[in-house]
Amino acid sequence: MRHVSIRHFLPAIAAAAACFVPLLDAQTPKLPKSPRIYIFDCGTIKGLAVTQFGFKEGEVPARDFFVPCYLITHPKGTLMWDVGVIPDRALKANGPTTEGISTVTKSLQSQMTAIGYKASDIQYLALSHYHSDHTANANDFAGATWLVRPKEYEFMFAEKPQGIIQVAHFDKLKNSKKVMIQTDEYDVFGDKSVIIKSAPGHTPDHQVLLVKTKKSGNILIAGDLYHYPEEGTMNRFPGFEFNKEQSAVARKNIAEFQKKYKAEMWIEHDVATNAKLKKSPGFYE
Figure 1 (cartoon, helix red, strand yellow):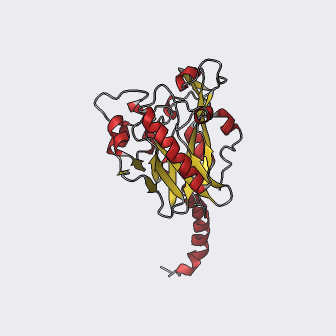
Figure 2 (cartoon, helix red, strand yellow):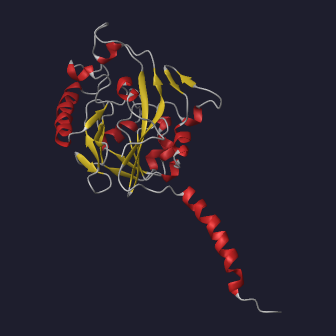
Figure 3 (cartoon, helix red, strand yellow):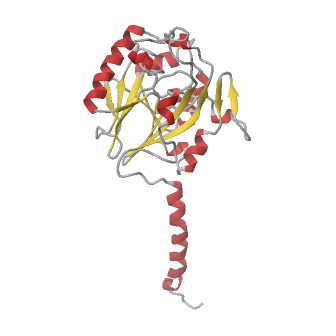
């Protein structure tokens, strides 16, 4: 048999490698050089009475709520923050899906796919709190490390969970890898550019998120510290707060925290706030 040198196969090997590298790139998203925030449209909530939020009828105009989900990408990894009101698995294939007063028009996963990510790419998951309009797709991220505070975990997995909660949204997280946050501020990536800050009261261990971006400045994603901006200016609280006194203290602390970092606050459900913000595939960096 005639001996054939491996050099005869090098062009073919190189060509195969050239085809394979883009495939790898497509499967593994490239991380940015500095933090980015992507906002996903995870639905709307209609018909909530202003009286549920501490106002009298006519004091403020009633309005729909926006439901956002956020992906934070960082040179050292990824963080998913809040994950919607209706699970992707419950969505209709050919149109909007409504459950009660909530409607979703597009899946979280389809929006992530559009920018090159899937749930298995996500390194960390954190929720502002356990209310069901923030937890819908949590089980999809059970492969991530869950960043959770002890009291929140305790209420989520209580023998008989109480309040605005859907355990089926997040039951797979119980056995997932997790970090129990014990400190007031938690530095997600170790460089103080993405900080989870305690803000209890709305729920036992409610928390907010600070992201420091190079071009867009510091952004404070406020969870449900407020729903209406007028809650702050008129000192009103929802009737379903876990602890209004704690919420009042948290709002004061977060105002000081916001001032310290000269951060812009995003009220997650506020339609007027979100109408001005660019949604994915756009991003803030």
